[in-house]
Length: 209
Ligand SMILES: C[S@@+](CC[C@H](N)C(=O)[O-])C[C@H]1O[C@@H](n2cnc3c(N)ncnc32)[C@H](O)[C@@H]1O
Image (cartoon, rainbow, N blue to C red; front, side, top):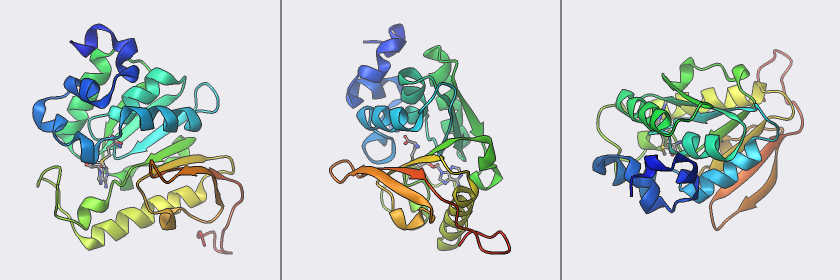
């Protein structure tokens, strides 16, 4: 079946069928690197608590989370991705599926100001700096220092976000979630945690704790 003939149904497909929208080499990475459709649906519905909520996918790959999220909610989805070829593929997917509430930015996360967004999705984007197994490809520089730099950047940006900010972590380490975010619910089975910021924690010089 050509998934693009029925774009409204993309968000109801199982992963094998959804992933047919991607070329084989990207499809082969899906079970490790891209969010399953059922997880994307659950995460997006939590993050978008009112129409127009601006959601940032931190490291969006070929746009699977943004595509599903944009189809099942009235949120505005932005994916940021450092690999240009994945940005091109994500844009192609969004265009072919006739989605108007998702867009992709080609950038490193450290160039993104989180104050332009209301909610955030985090699926282990920086782990590739720590492990050489099952890499997406070899085209980006990887190091322990970059893992630290990216993780600290995201943690600091999330710490500055206003009370009410929502975050979903998938397969991630809750240790990176700053003080002030409360777990609303979590599923060990799916390695999925839903967070909402309920209080601010700042030092006197306005640095996050
Ligand atoms: C585990 S994949 C998740 C993809 C997508 N969020 C999803 O759930 O389907 C992580 C992605 O983050 C990207 N990434 C890693 N570090 C990044 C950085 N510093 N800035 C932007 N993107 C990054 C990788 O290229 C990869 O595509």
